[in-house]
Image 1 (tube, rainbow, N blue to C red):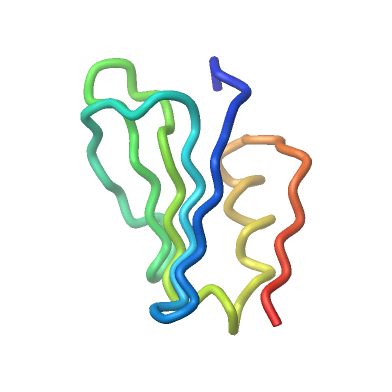
Image 2: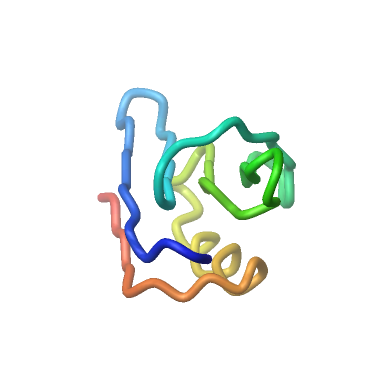
Length: 80
C-alpha cells in the first residue's frame, strides 16, 4: 500500500463497514470471502478499499482480511 492514509465508514442501518485507502480512483471489486470485497485500482492493482457486509455479527473477520491482503494498519473496530 503506497498511501498510509485511510478512512473508515460504518453504516449502522445496513451493518456495512468500508475502509478506504488513499485517494479514490476507478476500481474493480473482488469478493474474497462471503460478503467481503476488496476494490483494486484498475490500472495499478493497488487496494483502494475493503467492504464488509454484516460486520456486527462477525467483527473478527477484519483482522483475517487485513492479514490475507497483507495490510497492516493500527486498527481495532468494535461495534456493540
